[in-house]
Amino acid sequence: MSMKQELLRKIEEKQIRVGVVGLGYVGLPLAVEKAKAGYETIGFDVQSQKVDMVNAGHNYIGDVVDKELASLVQAGKLRATTDFSFVKDVDFIAICVPTPLDDHQQPDISYVRDSSKAVAQYLKKGTMVVLESTTYPGTTEELIKPILEEGSGLVCGEDFYLGFSPERVDPGNLIYKTKNTPKVVGAIGKDAVEVIASMYRHVLEGDVKEVSSPAVAEMEKILENTYRNVNIGLINEIAMLCHKMGINVWEVVDAAKTKPYGFQAFYPGPGLGGHCIPLDPYYLSWKAREYGFHTSMIEASGMINDRMPEYCVDRAGRILNRFCKALNGSRVLLLGVAYKQDIDDYRESPALKVFEQFEKTGAKVEYYDPFIPSYRYKGQVHTGLEKLDEQVVSSYDLVVITTAHTGIDYDMVQRSAAMVFDTKNAMKNVRCRDNIELL
Image 1 (cartoon, rainbow, N blue to C red):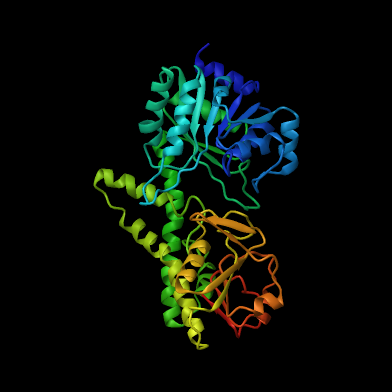
Image 2 (tube, helix red, strand yellow):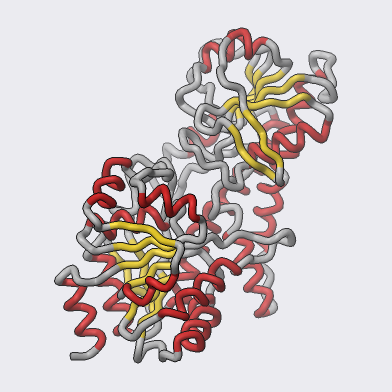
């Protein structure tokens, strides 16, 4: 029986043992779904705290159901470890580690490289390896393949299969989770694509789209997020122009989206947040330079989005000026530091940069976020207010809404605040608007 036939049989009979490297926002939900589908799953992570929490059945990711995690651990279907030697016991390995940017906005692939080296030491014949971390086109074939072959002594395509299947995780999305979001799979060789796609089809409810190579799958993931980056850059620039022209940009977008074709609504804000959208276009721009190509539209939208925190603070200063107040010394309250509403994720949140810009002006800035009592940014820990009431709100010269959390009493905020700068249109249903200014 060939390697392909043997793996397809083991997938069908639930005999595949799964390994997931990296137990974060992507890895833990994937590990849970693999285990729920009946495959014994081992999670690998270098952070012992995460490993201990998983093994205790304690969840730390919003998209994972607490009871499901605990049940899978108790049933012996899911466990976690920091010991990568257990890679030798698995037949399918998904690498789901961070791919941040360094201080110079260059791709930092150290986590992918180090994880690949750790896997290579214990990689056995007949294993499927899939990278899920978002990265530049070519990573799977140019970086991971040589590392796995050199470290294991095995040959890709003959002794093991290697592919790329980009994560599609949208924290807080009430409809699409890991289970029902369509998957894209690209791999080295037709057999690899077929087997890896089969593995995902036996676990997920969403459709699995097979493409001709890992590079195609890597590029399509970059396209997904660059599409949003560029369109958000466009609407942020339109918002700045609308402000100068005295036009409500939110009303403009609401009117435009009544068109049933050729238009998708994007909304302005204080910047871009989350792991993917603010970072991924830089991966493509970096790789494009290798071919003497400059991604001018992508880079232009990035510049617009990157300057939005500073623009918002400038607008806030103009609001205070109307009341004969300077930013220096004024008390400013930010409502929300999460990068999107109703989640506890503040990765790359523009609110953190807005907070930093206010501090640079000399403003006395604090924040309230019911989902994030404290956060660490550039080595400093910031602690939020414990409660939000009329007395608290009225003590500030300006309230700036930087995240549109739905659980906040915005009518109370309007009644109590001296002035509100709403960068997210979170107060759209508040009737009295005398002291509200929109981005």
